[in-house]
Image (cartoon, rainbow, N blue to C red; front, side, top):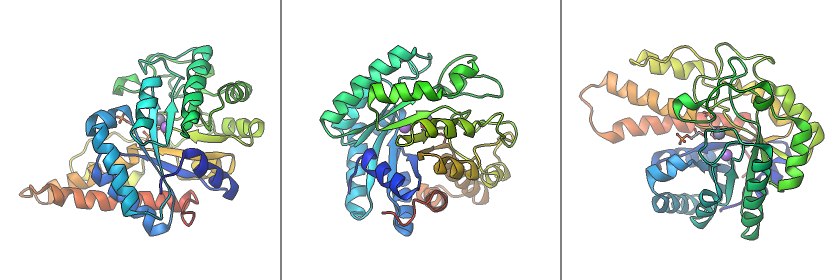
Length: 328
Ligand code: G3H
Ligand code: 13P
Ligand code: NA
Ligand code: ZN
């Protein structure tokens, strides 16, 4: 059954678990995530970016979500707009059956320029008011994702703020977070703590200097009843890098957010954990393996089935480690 983010995260808070939010663009990802959830009895957040919506088409995505709900009636499913950039994106998502939207007002509507605090409060408050009228939930973001190692924003891969950012912008301020949640009435708050989108988050296994989990503890202390969201939370597992590189990939060595750090976040109010890169790597590794091991193969299903299996196993591992399993 379809549920809102608010309903799901209230349950998660009451029972002390976190929920991975997996991005999807196509049928295979939807099937694999739901198969994992069914296998371990976990509630699900499936999210779609603006890019996913234009890739798959809004009608196709909406019908897919409907099909997944019908196939798995016992699994609570929250359908979430990832990184909505303005009111139009958020409201059109709701119109297509999404039960939750992120209004990312940490960036201007071009999704590249860091926004002022006043702009962020104003646009997020407007979206929250409208979404709540029709029973949808809202995630806001305070602080801009980017690397504490380099200060670099993320724009070179087409995502996030351009240029070099200050520590002030890269770490959410706990007092400002209190003001923001009060002013906007968001259901969940995405924070910045040194993570960034994509595979290249850290040049070494992160410590407190470059992955500031202590910021989350400080925010949770001031906002104990607010559901916190971690973006850029792929772990970029060494095994997935190795599979890709064993079969002709050329990914330079990189480090993601260790699952233990996410588990620690979950003890301090993190309830939604955004994961896309790990899912992409799990699938792409299998595409490469099949292409390398059987160069005569050309049936897409022979590539997609092992990719779905790898994605299913990854999702199941996160459901188990975040405590989501058993809570459907
Ligand atoms: O926020 C980033 C997510 O990984 C979605 O990426 O915009 O390429 O679909 P995308
Ligand atoms: P990753 O790139 O770490 O998977 O982050 C995904 C994300 O934050 C989507 O909003
Ligand atoms: Na989101
Ligand atoms: Zn994100």
